[in-house]
Image (tube, rainbow, N blue to C red; front, side, top):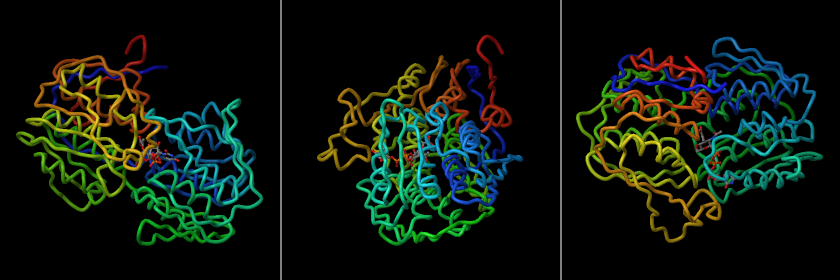
Length: 446
Ligand code: EPU
């Protein structure tokens, strides 16, 4: 049933809040359980819709799991199917990562075309090409919407990513770890979430090493064993909290904080006038400043300013005194929140930056870029935001609109909050505990 948030804005957030485990690691380590018959015990798993749905998908393959608080015990001893069902698989983008492990262990896999956040075309050509080089035979049938894959045996290869791919790198690691021989991934993604997955697989007995110059070398092993692993904090959630504190003119003392994963964000936040205090190695206090200066950010692969941070950042810049810009280079369609912020009075316009060679410059395929949309926005502030009825198209945009509503004057409504629930655990309850006024209502009444 569709749910909405009713938010009375204008209340400063104040108090302590704990960052949950990283969604973009949780989904991958759960998939890594397919690599062994033994039990994997995973701690700090966020209890979010994407995780619950992925566990359902894994259950349909015969995988047993048990959640106790934030610990998931999972065992792939008795796999009975190598087909990820279309109806759930297409809703959890990360489920296609099961392709490599299923091929490596069973020589076959049928996987639906990935879904997930609507950020553009989001093809997986780089993953497929890499797996084909490892000896997989993969065909996509548009009649049934599935990738059909088989292999006699995956073998090591050298694969060079033309452009950065976060999950592409993870997909090939998950396949190469049980392949025969050595795999070298060149121009591999450096996102810290990839390293967290690598650490978990190393504990399971995988031989994976990061080398200089964006190379990862994997020496295939014949089998992996069980392990116990605690996943990292969600750095995107920490950014959400920092911006929420600043936008609502309050403060948040953030526990399970990982500032070393947020360097480009913290630099811009402080430069603009946001206040950051280190309380301890794992606790950071974020507070509102008195006024903010405009900034110019361009999203980039690690170690740059992350694409996931650009929507809360653009919101923050509505409070800066002057003209700011945000240039998105990773996805061709990650500005769905702009029209919603404009409903609240934000002064934002699109423009197309002049780029000499967009085909090479942008991380997405330039042919997926539509002539009708732009890769950058100009935000002029400061603007006092007011209430509105809002809807969202992706997870980070959803969290951004929630912060906007908490900071705006009056009562706002956010519809179809399942996009937020996909990636943020009980976000309404956690914000209420730091003095936000949010009510969750189901369609038809509270
Ligand atoms: N791309 C291709 N072909 C490929 C792979 C990627 O054209 O084979 C394009 C994509 O369409 C995109 C760009 O290259 O335009 C970057 O894609 P990448 O593979 O790096 O990103 P992703 O794996 O689709 C992950 C996260 C995103 C996060 C980005 C950037 C997961 C499940 N998703 O996406 O997280 O924004 O990396 O770090 O790990 C989110 O959490 O809401 C989210 C969208």
